[in-house]
Length: 128
Image 1: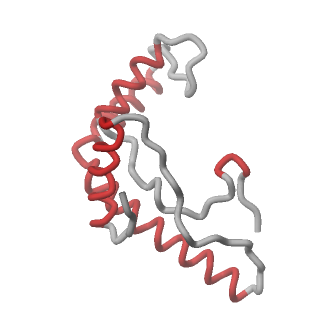
Image 2 (image 1 turned 135 degrees about the horizontal axis):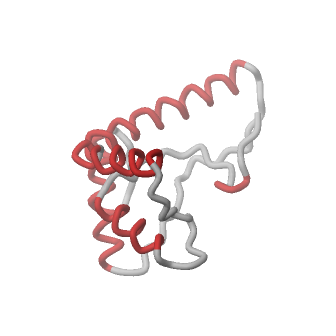
């Protein structure tokens, strides 16, 4: 059983917030005009890109419900993965003590508090 090194091998539900929110839209617009920005947001005006962007924006009203649902699904998925590992006797070097999120400003900290309130509604326990 393998996982990507890009995420440090996390089996974490702590990043369950969905991206469909106005803050992400504003970041995307900024990235469109920033050379070398990651992630790359294309300025192409083809039908596929425009319809994807329209669907993304159309999902914003469901941001809270989708974040809560994603938190629940993440917890469930982690539980199933750990159960499979036990049943198949797969040894996992696993730490179950959480992930530290670092915030550089009061604005970021306050945003994290709002997200944690949503994740708590999805039964994800976290401390701020």
